Length: 606
Image (cartoon, rainbow, N blue to C red; front, side, top):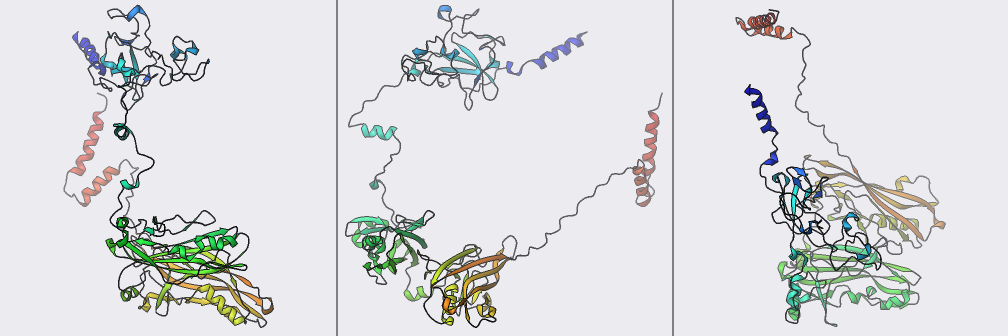
């Protein structure tokens, strides 16, 4: 008779709620004040009011805001407002009108604003302090303060008590500000200033890679930076404020447009060569403190005249500026030289000029040793994408180049280097003088392929000019091969297409790019001698073709082909076959089916 009661006793213990035992609360005993208009919060969550009544009593939910049996009631036996309004209403911005969600607005004429508004704006109700514990720990509440039950973001019910803490609604004592403590208070409570003083940061003792180079203009006693104008925007306009970086050899190109070139010819400093050399360079950034011993003058290698307006032409305009800076480690800059390239511009509306700015850094070695330094590699050993495609003419190594145009579209003496793996196309307009057909052909050929004419291309990026096996001959197809019956016309080369076949060799985990072959393909145009135009448009382009043949993938491990038998007697056949083949004289192959038959017979009716 006691067994059913024991079962019920076990069921009672199994059905006892886990939360009936004391558990740690997810909120600290003294929670921080919550924003006005919200309930208590727990760390890392935003509790929400539960759908049921506010306070549990004997695990049943009922509010304790009013009087309860055995519990001290609220003063006056009336409902207590958990969020009393403030006498100073900061959200009352509209005179004579009720501002929405402003619980302290007297124009709303609401006794309990929270019953009408979805929430109270910050500053319209007093700050509140809540103390929360896990709801499962509370069996009966006898707190004299208002209570509520909230559900946090993890779905755990929290029993919270509203504590009347008047200190939460008042600021600390207002500090007194005078001349003595103004700076101290500003540094203690203030953040970073928008403008930082230059004296607070002492210059470094030496230049680092990428640092701006400090210059000094003795005429105006001004410290500045070495500038390298660069192109900005789709039009490639010159940005003169671009600083040059230490040890960063760069070549920038930009375009200048002139509305009135006649006045800008002699007034614009960007056109005058003197503005690029009328300063000194400091050896190290800290040389500002000792200018006399730290100044390095800028040596002008090629003399350049000042711009001169002569009739309808602005002469001696700077088209190229090239700085060569010698450095010696932490000792800083040792020597600076500059050379110029000049051109003439025709005075016309909306005239333009394309300028080139080159800065080259090198170590301060002996002149003879510096002249014997090898040219930089384009890979080691395989080519790297974006590095120059190396060419060889005789014993001189250089780069394969493409045409480059000036600001007015005419062909420039400067050329674009062909970058390995980058397809590119460029063009310009070549102005021809009166001459015979052979002279035109020679001039246009030289303009297309550049000078000197490439004869070989490096197979790898680290090819040695002294090793002929490191280079492959370029295949040429000139206009003479295409000329058949053209006695009264002149075949002029107008386009050059450089085709490069390359492939990866070596390990697949570390492939190396090498050039397999190169061809210069000229496209020609037949022009009669009497109809030769003054300006002929020329085009050069380069295409890279990847001819890598990847090997077949290695075979994997043989897979398992599982097949299940469909014959009921398959286990017996296997047992007997094994018994005959490898277990002769054993009783197990015969004993196994006998035991199975005996087990089946034992299942019969008794």
